[in-house]
Image (cartoon, rainbow over all chains, first blue to last red; front, side):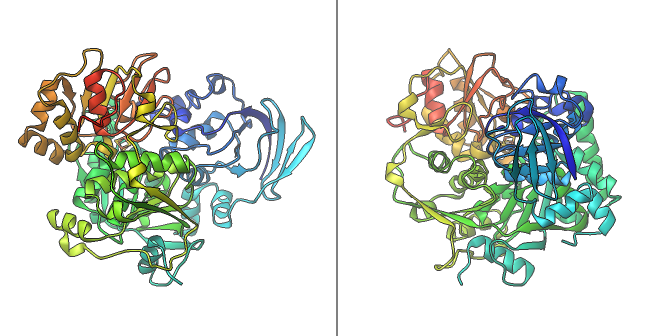
Length: 165
Length: 417
Ligand code: SF4
C-alpha cells in the first residue's frame, strides 16, 4: 500500500475522548454526522478542512483511553489515509487495523503540519517530500498486516471463514 | 521456566504451554457489548452474515451507558439491542441493573476465564484472576460470532505493594500512585500483576478499583492472584464452585518489577487533563471545584458509598458545589437504601441518579459548565471527558470526594476518617 498526502500534526497523548467525544454518543449510529466532529477536542480546524488522503501525524500514545472503535472509524471517514505516531495505545491500534486504517509507528518529531509525505507500507518507508528526508519504520506485525491487506477483520473473516491466524 | 498469571491462564485455555510474545487463538468464556458500542457490534455481525452468537448463554448485552435513555436515537439503539438479545437467546442486563463491569463481577466472572467486552475497563474482572480485556466492536463481534479471539500473550510488569495503608488512604490512592509512576503508556501491550501483602489484605471491592484502572497505564489486563478473598467473594455470589487458585510461579519471568511501600502512599488526585498527572491531595488542597461525582465502575460500589456517607453523616455539603452520587448497580442501590447510606447522602445534599455510568463519560447528566472544575471518583479525566472540553476533571478516592464536597475545595480526607 502506498499513500501520499498532506500532514495534520497533533501532539502527544491524544485520547479517544478528543478523537470522538462521548458527548456525541447519540451520533454513533449516524457515522457521517459523527465524523464531522473528528478530533474536535484536539484541533477544531481538522474536521472541516481535512482532504481525502491527508495524513494524521501525532506524538506518543495516540488513541489512549476507551475502546470505542468509532475513534479510528471517524478518522478514516474524515478522509485520512493513515495515522503516523511515535506510539499507539493498544486498543486503538488493534481497532485501526481491524477497520482497515493503517497505523504506523515512527519518530514524528521532524514532521510538521502541512508537510507532504509519501509512505510505502510494505517497504516500511516514509519520505517527507517537503523537507527531503526519509525514515524507515518497523513493519506492521504479520498477523495485523494480513488483516489490513484484506481491508480489515470483517473482510478477513468473510474471506477465510474464520480466525486462521 | 515459571509462568506469570497471564501465561498460566492462557496456557490452560489453549491446552499447551505458551509464553509471552506468542500469538494464540483461544476460546472466549464471556463476551459482552453495551449500549455505546453494541449497535456497531451488531452491524459488524450483520456484515459478516453471522445471525447467531456461537454461545448465546455466554454472550451478554448490557444497557448501562445512557440510563435512563435521554433521547429517541439512543432509545432506538437500546431497543435494537434488547430485541437482538431476545431473538438470539443471549443474556441481557436491562438499564438500571448496573454498569457492565459491575454486572460481570457480580454475576459472571471467575478465575481463569477469558472475558472480552467492548469497553476498555473490562480489565476490572482481573481482580478475580480472569483474563479480561477490552476490545473494539469488530473484535467483540468476531468473538460473539465464532466464540474465539486471537491474542498476543503479554509480557508482565509486576506491581509489588507491601505494608499497611494509613487511615484516609485507599486502593484508589494506590492505583493513582502506580499510574503516576508508570505513566499512561507505561504498560502499553503489557499485563500488570498486583502482588504483595497490601493487595492480599484488600477486600474484593478494593481490588476491583486496582484492576479497573490498569488500562489507564495502557495495560491489556490487570491481574490479582485468586486467593481466599476471591473464594469467599465467589461463595457470597453463589459461584463458589467456580473458584480455582491462580497465582504466578515464584520463578516467573517479569519484564519489570515496580515496588511500592504502602506507608508512603498518600491520598492522591490526578489533575486535569491526564490520569498520570498525579499529586498528593495535600499539594492541591484548597483548589475550588463546583461539582463532585461519586460513582462509576471504579468507585461506585457500596463500600465506596459507605465511606462517603460516614464522612457526610449529619452534615451538609458546601453550598458552593453540587454532589452527584450514582450507585454502580441495582444491588448497590438496594444495599445503600437498606443500611441508610442513601438517606445520609441525600440529607447531606446529594442528587442520586440511577445505577449506570452516570456522569462518568459526559453523555448524560452532570456536565460541568465552561471554566468549572469537577472532582470525580471515576477513572479518566481527559479533556472533554465529562462532556465539556472547557471544564477540567480531577480524579480521587470517595473519601477525598466526600471531604471535598463538605469543604467546597479539594481537601485531604485524613483527619475526617
Ligand atoms: S462508569 Fe465510566 S468508565 Fe466505567 S464503563 Fe461506564 S463510562 Fe466507562
